[in-house]
Image (cartoon, rainbow, N blue to C red; front, side, top):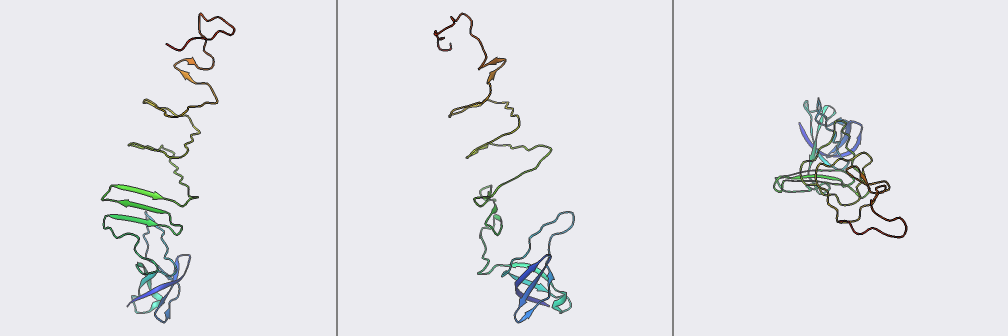
Length: 180
């Protein structure tokens, strides 16, 4: 037997479904399990399908998700994939535009842990502050349109900006000329 209903409550790995006048006992929902796991619990108020193999709702299994007024389809493009969290964080891939977008709420953060390293390939643009606490190595030209500051010395080859000396300069108030 197949029943349609609305999630009344979710607790752990089971949910209670209201199917017409019938309230189910806590039932499991279909999930992706095995070597790959996906945890996407149903939400209270979501419309679902309950499959009851022997006709008894107590042995039912919930098939998660039928779009409704309470939970409308967030996109209609057949070339987009979207994952949206309860705090409105979204992961969207638009195959037509070849664009992947992650959007987090104002206080959202991203943390990537990759002990083996992390590699970007392609042009990269950072808007906002950028902080590195480890050493940085660049194998290409660096251009800056703003001020560059350092709390320490700057070196070009073995020449120190703070501690280099100019020969043939008279000590005292006399200043050197511009670089040549």
